[in-house]
Image 1 (cartoon, rainbow, N blue to C red):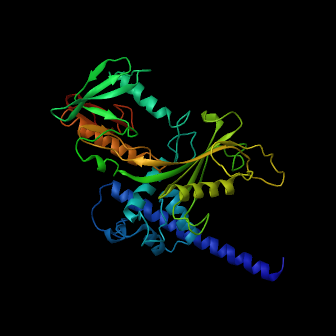
Image 2: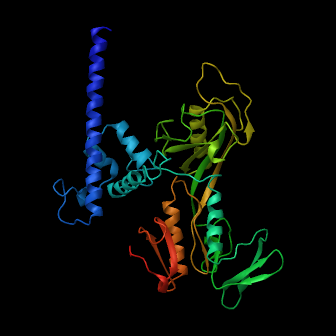
Image 3: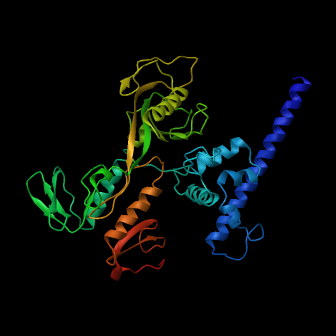
Length: 391
């Protein structure tokens, strides 16, 4: 090794050590702020109290990270892999959703508290067996235990409306039976004429789009790892990339693909279908070994793995763009569709709002943390039955 190479090695080591020191200092500051906030300490701000000042909390998160002297690569990891920012935070003027320090710290706190919650889960994320489509099944089974009727193979063919009062009063089943009700909740994918607004305004809530990709691959994108999350920050795939692209790999041990294979789910928010699909296809090119094909939707790949290429082979893929319908209120209630986020925070919050509007004065809902009920579950019960030590 020549002297020039040695000097470069020392310089790189010195730079890496400095980056690690600054990152450690930042996480220590975040932990101190979380601890001070959770303890209810309202006395003072700054380093003495361990809390981040209100002025800094109102800053864009990227400006706060720059203030902590974190390097661009480290900032990208914090912003897009941990704080889960979707849009280019460097483009403050054109950024559709600029993350504040307050929201960023809140997500970091959730991420930190999620790590190590389960013995067999190393990261901060858990995922259901058989895919996320099993979650509605879990809800229906839980609701049935609590007395709800859960009917199979009986689709709804029509909605019943009171013409005089201009409100929906029930549904008609495929069997011809009419079910009358005081409140009606529909899935967000159902489009019905609104009684509260003009017909031409009914599509005004279709404001967002999400490009999604589902892939089956021959081997893991990371050797010796079965479940992996890969994040492509804005501008990492191409210069015009304005949103982050995330790729979640799950193995066959969670029953989402054939044995010995892996499933990759990719997603990114987008303003138009062409751009969204372009980002997804570019991420697939980076991650997988594929044949050139004009149609990337629903095709089978027959390529054999090149010995010199360590990328997994793409066996099957589907790319599509989905319009995100927001929840509605009024005579008919609905929850929003699954959005571009990997977690369920926004969906849960919207669902709780629907529950509150549905059960005003009748039920009480809260997050139980004591041992009387199953810790970490939202409980819904009549107020007269409430008997919990954590409330």
